[in-house]
Length: 238
Image (cartoon, rainbow, N blue to C red):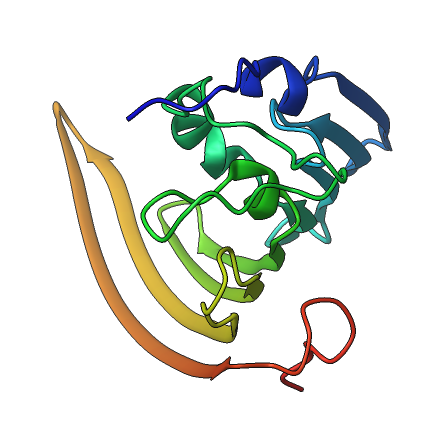
């Protein structure tokens, strides 16, 4: 059966996806030392109204020839992203029949029926995420001779991702539900490499002796809830 609506859900629920990018960097050094540092900010709107992500990033590189035999260096980068993930609704908005009235006569959102969730209700749902990433590496290189050097490198990676989701009741008799997820992981790798390189007459001879140690850890937590007292205030699982 057909309803008497004639609503353009795409026009009601989408926007121009504006993007703003800002960045600044500095580079310098001396005869035996160099460095580079930068910071960036990105603010991007999604196609669906209310959808947005904000990302802040930073990077730092440093390298120094401490002496004729010793070289030291480090690289670090970090980022933080906050997102309101409403663009996952795009397919549902496109597939929404225009004969379904968006609103009731009293101005409230039309809940339609059990089989059809009004995307205007889903627009009020929460689907947010926060992610943090840190990568760092440092190395120390020692030249025993022109043909023999030792390099030790330490790498570390850390990631933390959190999700906070809440789905409102979308028809009479339905139940709302919420979910929170939190995962974090880190990886540490320590590499040691001894390299021999020498030209003997018409031949190049290379030999390497290496050792690597890796440690990884992962933690995950998820909490689910349903049948909250309301859809707006008492919706926090934590």
